[in-house]
Image (cartoon, rainbow, N blue to C red; front, side, top):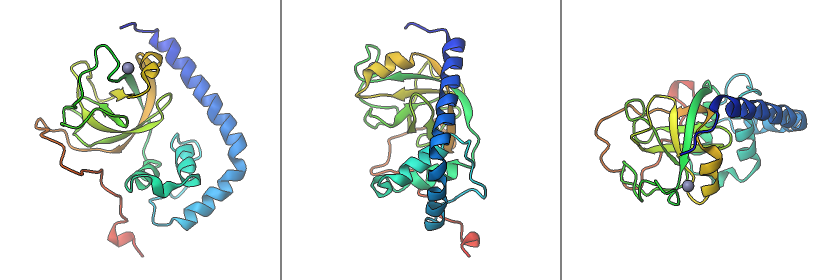
Length: 210
Ligand SMILES: [Zn+2]
């Protein structure tokens, strides 16, 4: 596989992403009032005490709430809102799909079908069913359902881009950011993904319910 000059490509992407964020923030100023109203309306969500406008998940949450958020899986919105209180971290990513010549087959390490919305990670750091949001150019919430011999280290993900093979080339091996949304303890026994398994739905702890 051709490995692009990571530092320069990565830096340019981050600078471009920064520019996009600045432009979006400038455009989105009137939307913040709407978002505050939405936050007041959706008090059941784990909002941080201060709106973290700079957080990479802020525009994601905003977009989900502006769309038909009820169409999302039940766990997704609370997990994203909870993610606003978590620090983004740097990571290195590659991407794969069934059209890639070295694609690993139709099933994941967890026994599930290879599909969009999942990724492979190092099982020494990530248990099956962990959830991460991966930044540009992926911009997706991914469930850790797979592993891979070359996927080593806590900040390394191989993202399934099923149906978008051109993204596998575009991503190559790049640096981006991620936000850990849900950590599952690492285990050596992955077994099979339980039928109907979904990530946990965040609920307000009883002592904060008042
Ligand atoms: Zn591919």
